[in-house]
Image (cartoon, rainbow, N blue to C red):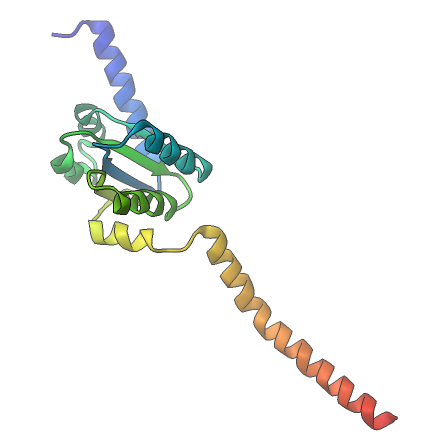
Length: 168
């Protein structure tokens, strides 16, 4: 039986983990078995640059953190090595980055995920992984707004040019 200090530390870890998971809009759990140090460092750097919190979690502590929540179904995949990637604002980044890495690796696999506090199946996580980055989506929207305005400006310029030729 663990002493009171160890038990208190573990309860604090579970509470912190529960808070992080609750604040995240998306979470992706992976089996990171077989990843080498160089690849792990590069993966962590890319995740960090995209505002994703990525860390290794003990299965028992993660299991306790999701207990009595809508994410309790995650417990079925909590075996072996488990790391979790959480994002509080970007829905696509964790799925996109981890999926890209999993495609290149034989042993690194996506186990499960969740969106807005609800479990998501692997097909949903893979679909989200295929979404373009936030910047690309914003650029597309801006382009869509600019297209009609640019077409109108060209039409007005064509009328001005046509009328200018007739005036001479």
